[in-house]
Image 1 (spheres, helix red, strand yellow):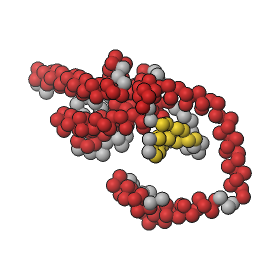
Image 2 (cartoon, rainbow, N blue to C red; image 1 turned 45 degrees about the horizontal axis):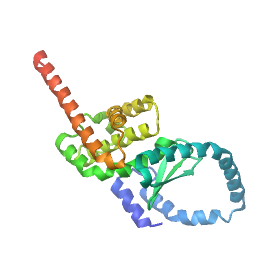
Image 3 (tube, helix red, strand yellow; image 1 turned 120 degrees about the vertical axis):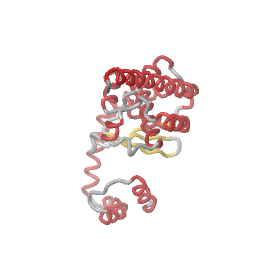
Image 4 (spheres, rainbow, N blue to C red; image 1 turned 30 degrees about the vertical axis):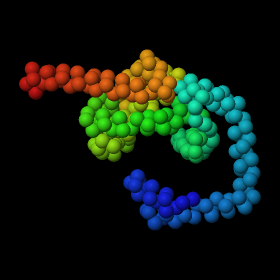
Length: 248
């Protein structure tokens, strides 16, 4: 573990530390030693055996979901689909995390979910068009992609910089495409919209219409950016007209 690099990451991310930075540094620095010590405690092995038994019981159900995820990924990526794997974490039922090692992306969660497993992988796809999205952000801001107040409230956007707005727009793309590829219902799209990602249902509808593969994704991004800006401009024009005519 590169402790200095991890501390640097925390500083850059500006995470709040509820227990105090000194206590946290001591805890994270001692963690490798604690993990090694746990291997020597007899009861740990018996608990681990019980944990593996639970994993074995759940594995048949998980295998079906993982097969669905592989099929969904291959339909989009073709033969160039990245390696995706699942690591169970039964102790964090409401949390999903990801680890990237080379071309492999591992989803860590209590249960595998097709949308969640695709989500992080699709971030790598959308990131290839970050310059294009950044250019859009600098010119038009959120421009109908998201509800600024909700996004700020839920912590998806730190400030009004182009970089933060770009991150939000990328997130909207990833959420929409993940839902469609996972064959989730429209209700799932509305859930994302309720958290401030207003454009997710629209992006999903465009993805369903165009059905781009990864090689066609750039054209898809261009189309969505152009149509979203066009829709936003029309709405703003109508609001301006109403304000003029009502004396607001």
